Amino acid sequence: MKYSNLNIPLTALSLATVALISACGGGSTAGPTTLSGAVIDGYIMGATVCLDLNSNNVCDTGEPSAISGSNGAYSLTVPASVDLAALHVLANVPTTATDNGAAITAPYIMLAPASMAMVVSPLTTAVSTEMKINGLSVANARIAARGVLALPIDYDFFKDHVAKADVTAGNTASVMAAVLAKAVGSATPTNTSLGVALATIKANAINITPATVAGLISSLGPSGTVPVPVPVPVPVPVPVPVPVPVPVPVPVPVPVPVPVPVPVPVPVPVPVAVPVPVPVAVPVPVPVPA
Image 1 (cartoon, one colour):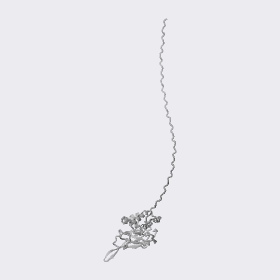
Image 2: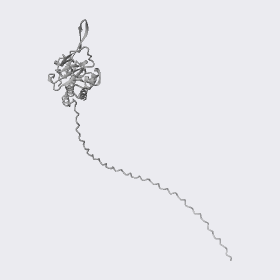
Image 3: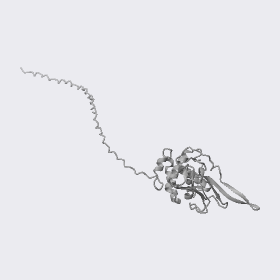
Image 4: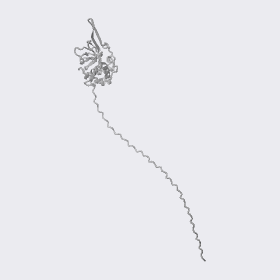
């Protein structure tokens, strides 16, 4: 569905799931239970809705069923003996159905836990899938589905996102419906096909915006998966060698040797020997005899 801000009376969801008690004979016995709700991506008119009593993901003959009418409204009469806790409501959306008056271009199937079947939508299908594949309780499946769908932690799956003009939920539901049309189509849903749908929406939910809805839907492969693009090899640039500058040698100044003063030896005066006069012998005249 292309999401728009619609102001459609919430007639279908004003009906809660009620138990009707009828009197019989002298006492009272439990009567059938009525499950009332709406089939929504936009409001789906002409979908076959049933309570899957034997959990085979098919609307079998004899199971409570109805055709959704104006605003997607449906009502199922269920025997009082049926325990709804583990059951699911199926909505088979054929190409003869309409979505807010627009023709359905590809069939798909949606589910919702029977205990929260006031809304059967692509979003509640995630809750049922978590229960079927991972064995979660309704409460834990709702928590898990919020994470898968990238919805707020307090998102209410009972809410009519069309009447509430919840753009985020509406866009996510549109993509999930397209995923279901590709992954499941009109075939009997299996854990495998539902698992593929759940994995696909989980991988893409964070990217869903009003600007990306159409692109995500058109990119879906035949099995409902978004094809992984083949990476285009990016040419590796050849590095251009950067010339390494040759360092100019900085002349190292040669230290000028500082002359070390050589000590001049102080001459030591050599004492001059005073010559000792040698006495000269005076010759004694020898008398000459006369």
